[in-house]
Amino acid sequence: MSSPRPRIPEATVARLAVYLRVLTGLADGGRSNVSSGELASAAGVNPAGLRKDLSHLGPCGVRGVGYEVATLRDRIARVLGVERSRPCVLVGIGNLGTALADYAGFGSRGFRFVGLFDAAPDRVGRRIGGQPVRPMAELDEVVAATAATIGVIATPADVAQPVCDRLTAAGVRSILNFAPVALNAPAGVDVRQVDLSVELQVLAFLGQQRGAAASSVEVTA
Amino acid sequence: MSSPRPRIPEATVARLAVYLRVLTGLADGGRSNVSSGELASAAGVNPAGLRKDLSHLGPCGVRGVGYEVATLRDRIARVLGVERSRPCVLVGIGNLGTALADYAGFGSRGFRFVGLFDAAPDRVGRRIGGQPVRPMAELDEVVAATAATIGVIATPADVAQPVCDRLTAAGVRSILNFAPVALNAPAGVDVRQVDLSVELQVLAFLGQQRGAAASSVEVTA
DNA sequence: AACCGCTTGTGAACGCAGGAACAAAGTCGC
DNA sequence: GCGACTTTGTTCCTGCGTTCACAAGCGGTT
Image (cartoon, rainbow over all chains, first blue to last red; front, side, top):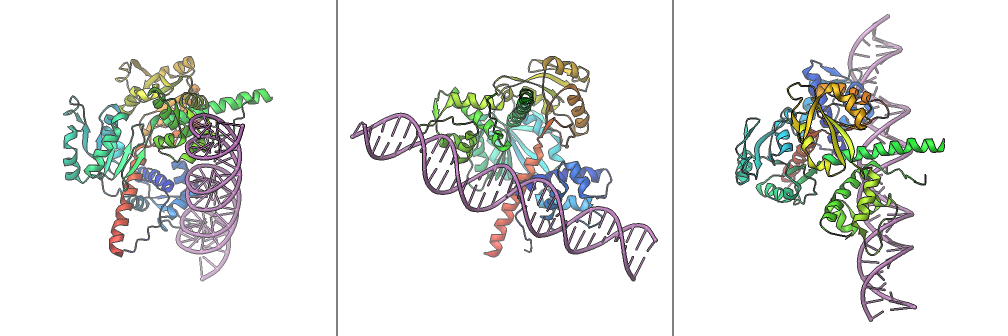
């Protein structure tokens, strides 16, 4: 293969996902060209940084003109590996799990849930977004049949680790964990952690710091 | 004031929130002491980094022994500004908003929702977690009455910006945004963005990269 | 009372991300 | 056809975050 694969930094990958979303919106709106400045503004980043991010994909713009929306969108989608829809399984169909299963943003961005699982018998059989909630016993079978490589955990914290073990045993290679615990996964399995309350706590800290700074100004004044 | 306030890095603040969660769990389990190694393992970080994070709070451990769980927990809570419960308002009571309003993790970590708002008339009046969904018209009144400084946006993307404007106009100073758009907020207002599908796309990229690496090994082998 | 082992706290080096400035390149106008 | 303008791609640099490694300090033991 001639693919250079120049090791794209993870921070850049996360931003590429944002650019992809903006570009998709622009394409749907009929736009065909866009400049780095406009794209950066819509994505909330610095124009120079955006160009540096895109430079990891090789030259994909035209100097003096900008970027072609559809071309850039497709290129980013291919780099991110979402040019084809990827099958995912979701474990834990509580409030959050239901919201995730119903979230249209996943489907429009290259992900589809091919299996919803829960351990509670009274949740099994309910239909969410046109799909039935299945018992955990069917997990291996579904993962094998659909070749799903991504698993999402939206269970309570105390069962997240066993669920992680079952997912990896079934063949899942990437896990997105919403439970507030650090997961232990075998080597070769990527785990990403999303803790909703951590973000709130960072906000609380920034807000308190701002308040303290204001009052210290009063004191020093 | 004698508080030095040595400018804690934001990355450290985010990890402090994780340490706080782990410490709360340890305290509930009856543990009184913990070492940096054990704490780091439970939080999924490097022990040296954890000690450096804690060093921003001043000396709070005992050499040769470790950290006292309850003391450290209280100190981190005070630094983060969550030693008292903070009032928050939530706008957008769809699937995700309902999940957030019901999420017990917020309440146990120093946040309480004092107002749930939605623009859709058929959602107004429903009760979620013991609270009624209110019409947007009551937003200013509730923010003023409760002195809420934190707002959470869980609306569709196309109304997130106007909702942000209304929140800031009502006096909210910190915003947690789940809608997939970059918000424009006035100076002095902190905005944090959580895009659930970005995390999935990073996973997809890592998975694809791993697959490509494996096949290139085949080729070179 | 002195020693030894364990753990914290800190200092230094490394690597990475972010921002600004500059050169290359293509287009539009004349 | 030529020049000027616009915008990309790149390079340098500064600052931050992370990691490793060591010195300092405390408890337990003899």
